[in-house]
Image 1 (cartoon, rainbow, N blue to C red):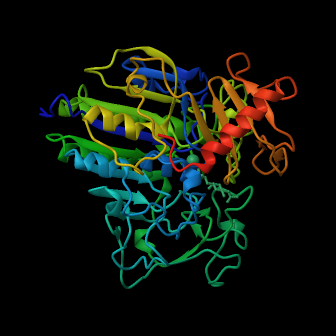
Image 2 (image 1 turned 135 degrees about the horizontal axis):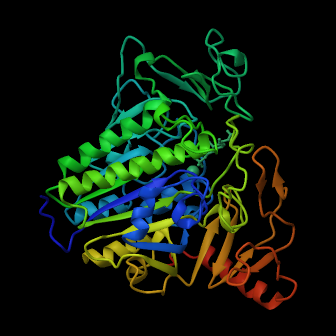
Length: 491
Ligand code: NG6
Ligand code: CA
């Protein structure tokens, strides 16, 4: 039995990669069943208005871990696999804050916040890793499952490193090692073809973004990744069940390339995208069962959410579009990953604390992942100093499902530094340059040469632009957006 004091519950943040508002059964999905994620809804709070800070990964995760809007960090944008760490090692972070409160801290899974502070030498102990921003333990992939280097990193070391076969990584247009195959030159070697991009180095029969060489023994096998990360998760939980802990469990699903373990192939009729969601749901179930077995489920806060909205074709021919049928990955919401419309950031968000928080609540409170930091600070009696978690709001009551009062307003990011603003039920998307759709991904970008205004209360699918009808509101919201954007703190 764990002996965690009541006032310092364990905290696990389970963070899916590109999972949409309509992709799990407790949010209405029919084509894919997620009985384990649904357990969290049954035994906790389902947020109808839960938001990631941005419609892409790196900015969202930056905000989750720092409590700062992504626009505050110039480099918070989709990073290559050899990018430097973008979180200031001196800054306060969620894991650092919890460490101060006596928590053991760990991260397992997708990182994508950079490593090192210049060009990384993968063959030596790495510098500026998750260990330098507050995690005691770390077992990660450096970036995404479609980017090199395709190796796991435990602490500051590549797992399975062989000094006889050093790893080299290059992000450039041309293949730097013409004797090595690439997806572009050797499509016959691919088991899953790319639809756009993803035609550089071939690892495990899949073309990736970026080129890598060496490290043959260290290369991951995509189909084993769920088991590898789950085993490491269970080890962390077993090792720390006698003390308060924080685990950031960052799933790699359903991001591309979607290569489930054979046990999950064909579990849904949606093809690989549905099957990896089923696989992730299984990981959630295994994690919950492990907490039960350790006797610590009741005193563990489990949050489940996603870093951004869904996407069907994100660069591989995996039939996500063809097999989608009636399934609506973003549910009733307009837009997807990369979009300025709601489906880009409005994501499934659940919280279960079985021993403490009421079960089966459906909350209308608006919460943003940014807010976990200040809310948990409140829960644990931690003072945040000026400048720390500058945009994280203490809405603990809402986070624990006790109050329907969440955030009143927030800036949100579409793709690459584009922004929009939600205030109460109103959403203002300022004028943006760029195309209304991106052909390769099929994204409804939300970019228009004029501002758009929606009222989500009466128009959840953002079908009626009210900007012409309410020019004064557009102007007032534009001013407020500018004020928030130009300030240094919104906490
Ligand atoms: C894009 C990739 C996409 C995905 C995304 C990051 C191409 C053509 N597309 O650049 O496949 O990797 O970056 O996704 O390369 S995220 O969820 O990590 O933000
Ligand atoms: Ca993502």
